[in-house]
Image 1 (cartoon, rainbow, N blue to C red):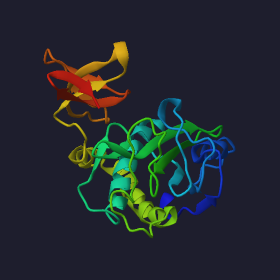
Image 2 (cartoon, rainbow, N blue to C red):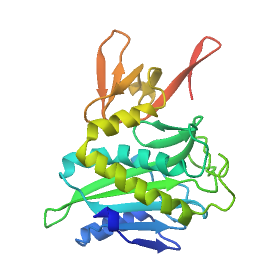
Image 3 (tube, rainbow, N blue to C red):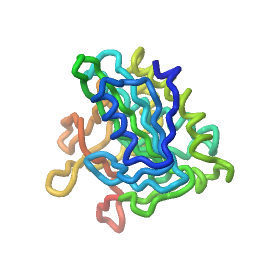
Amino acid sequence: MIADAPVLWFDEIDSTNEEARRRAQAEETGAVWLAGRMQTAGRGRLGRVWDSPTGNLFVTALFEAPGGLANATRYPFASGLAVLDACAAFIEGGQLQLKWPNDVRADGEKLCGILVEAGTTRSKSTWVACGMGINVRTAPERAGQAATSLLKLGANEAITPEIFLDALRPAFVLRCRQAAEDFNSLLTDWERHAEGLGKQVTVGKADDAQMGIFKGLGPDGALLLEMPDGATQTIRAGDVELVKEIDGDAARN
């Protein structure tokens, strides 16, 4: 199980999630933590590039998933909460929020991105790779949005990726156990830290964007969007942005 999983450190790697995928395809489904000090081809959701400078943590937890692929969508929520739990050991509480479905942010600035992938091996076992990129010491300039780091948020200068991972591992184990045994309570915990809950948000981009009130999470973790006509849309994929009123005009942050 992931509770006893070893940590394999790479001084340089293309992507810890890619390494997890390679291992899974070779029937090596873990459990193992794959951690990189630098990535040459880090990636985030929707194929985006993940800037991976030395000093930050790039790590993937690879393990076999109880409940199969149907439960794999629980792990972005478990991962986000685990990062919040771990951060509490290094920075003042209350600074962080969770942006649906898988970012950790502080005052609208990205601290951590999460990429969860899953699949089935030839022998029919289900694997999950929870990739987490945490800005420990550096706020990348090419994050695609404003970014921050634990150092900027007040962490001690001595913090390192290794130190943060030591705090993240037990937090992740507990949140994954909660995801497997009591997903409803996990979603309730997630909502307590949700960015934009009860506020107007947009989901999607350009012509496909929908605007409404973020009302909460459905039983499977989907975003519930209250539309202007009072109907509720269930959103299971898409980028969410807060809408702010500036000089009478709506502007996305």
